[in-house]
Image (cartoon, rainbow, N blue to C red; front, side, top):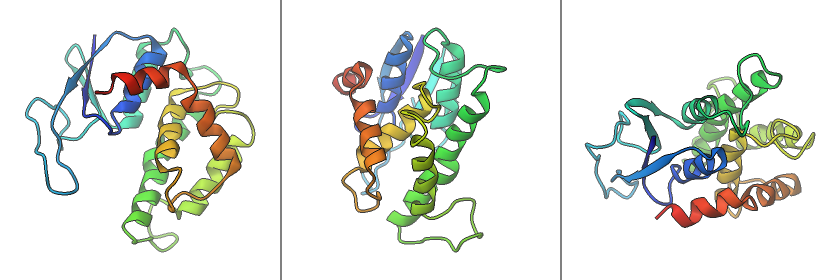
Length: 197
């Protein structure tokens, strides 16, 4: 049984979506978190080392950080094939797009939000526009990041783009808008929204 350490309307909700897609057995454990406005506190029940969400426990095996959780869950519950397994075609692309999400895309967005764009070549990420150009180029080749196959990588990107869609930080793109529509139209997405609390 997977325990998802959760706080409504945070990044942990995307893992309700993924667990629903995987048809994996899970339970939610709501925990308190620190908020950017100074409210909240670290919950001692939360195994994340910084008291953030998401984090999961698989009968005592703790996994935290979104790409690691996505990879762990898709390897652990392969029935619905939401991530290529070791040796399967597409595994390299899957790992790359999972890593790109937190290694490049999120830092680019956070840098923009904090108005601290790092000079080109000085950080491991690039400006939002350059990062999005790479994502849009990939999505222009097929409906999902892995082409025709929906994967856990799409859960990460699609939910982020749905959240930032109206933000001035998010460059406008018909390709991304159509992608978000495909992601949020999935029945598992609706179930996750209803269950998140």
